[in-house]
Image: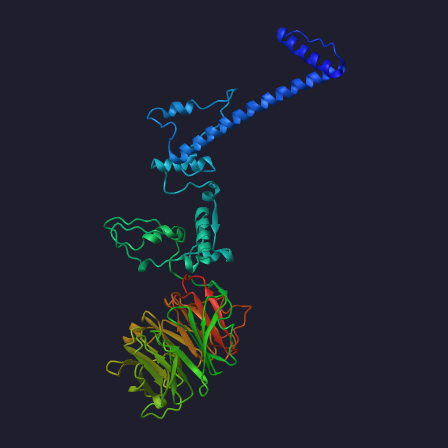
Length: 564
């Protein structure tokens, strides 16, 4: 008998023997090789059987998973649920042979899937209407209430004061003021802000972007978006009051960095939209820049061949630019049509220079300083002479009142004249204390005060009502300049007064008007302003532009003001 037949017989003998005597030990009559081969066949058969069972179990699990997914997405297709049987079915989940669950149901899928149990609890509570409107702090420092900080003693913390006499505050108040300071120094981007004043709501209308639904009867509430858009009002508690002492500012890129002037800058002015800046100087060019504090892109440039520019100014309505020099004529540039018109000489006048002028706040009049104490009134529409005013001395400076109905003037006789433009008569005249020759005038935007500068460097600040009432004593005399005062300017809310002299380097001072004191950190100690010649504040107060004799326009950001 061959080896193969012996192996076959031995295997058959083993199987029959095992069937008859399952628990008795097997006795093989073949050789050692036959015994090993029989054991390997048993292992292979068992592994095949186990593999089939696993494949069958996987098919069952996959089929159940598919049914569960179909039920989840499309409803109960195979076994529709009945009320009262959900819990029993949940308890009767399919179990494996060893008693472990084959799968489990994630309950967070009924809400939005959550990665944390806390978020799932919040979502469930929101469904029940039990979520509070304000999140709870993760950690609270108990030492904050016990801590006290002296913000007046440390120089870098003085900016956190709300009042001049603030000194010791609690730790929690210190934290809130730091947050407010951070929010003030890092305002939001412009593109993320929407003007709520331009939005109108119909009955039961909803805002698709913010998801806010306006209830019936509250359609005129314009601050709905503002309440939900930011938490700045909850964090920033500071008022609009500017504190004296130190001015918070930062130096930005020069306003005319893309096209500096080849000569001294004589005029800088912001347009009413706060984005357009005009610069003009003796290089006979008028330039326009879009101010953003980063690039300051140049928009347009105008070259006037026969007129080195001494002064250029926007009309308050923003439609035109009046450009004048030491000439008998002046120019008008129309911003809408982009055309330049040459006007003059004025009929009946022999003035050789129209370089000094002021524009009325209502954009109706242009007042030029003429010869021999004359003030020339020109219509901004027709550009024709419509009247004159006559002072006793020479006229050197002009300033319109805030409403444009009155005009202040000063000059060589040391007196301040107040004119009524409706009747074109002088309604009051008073001596400027300590002044021999008046060189500059400026009125505040609110009309309550005005400032007068002289050739000795003295600046007197008056209250308008008191001066008209006969009280000629100024409320404050500023003596920080030692040379002739050439230029003065109030900012938009009359909290800052800038005074400037062109005859000395860095001769530019900023006065805190409420306290009538000069800011001690201006001009910057490590920065040269060269010879400043002109200055302007942006309509919102956020930017300050300074023109110098070097042909540069320095740009500064005032942090107290949020808007440009």
